[in-house]
Length: 177
Image (cartoon, rainbow, N blue to C red; front, side):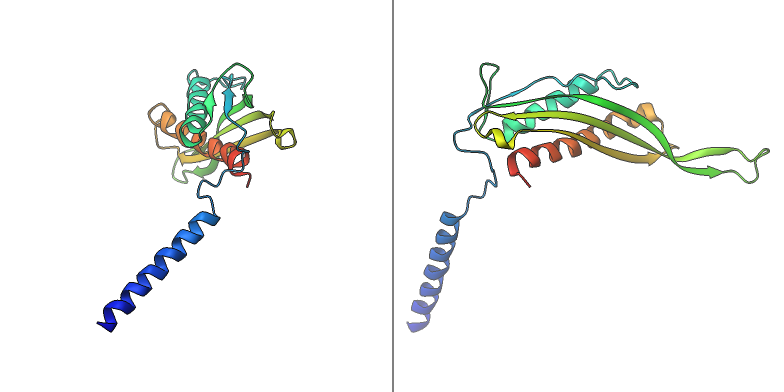
């Protein structure tokens, strides 16, 4: 009988400790003020010299979805508490690793890997906490084998780079890391 009471006491202690810790800490990790209720995320035009026809739409939709799905903010265009806007300033695919064919006549040189780079300029305006507003440039890249057909993998590489950039933006605004 004593053993049952001891286990019950331990379970009760663990439960109360967990409850106490949970009440002291918010698991949302958001640094946004509780007064911040609305957000307007405008379309990010693609102003990069190298054009990707779908990049603006894909990036804009992905960043809007991130904020609307992972925060309690409501989308609005009428006097939002938070405004996020910007532009895509660079989109490039460049060789990163060069290989040469020793047996080939003239020693042909070709790219062994290519790098996709996207650069996005962001204007963040917080009307509830203006001191948190900023203008920043974000960039990221994905490296892939030059043996792969760029037309076949471009969409997946763009999605990967977009996701990384949006993570950085989201963390800077919501998590304030």
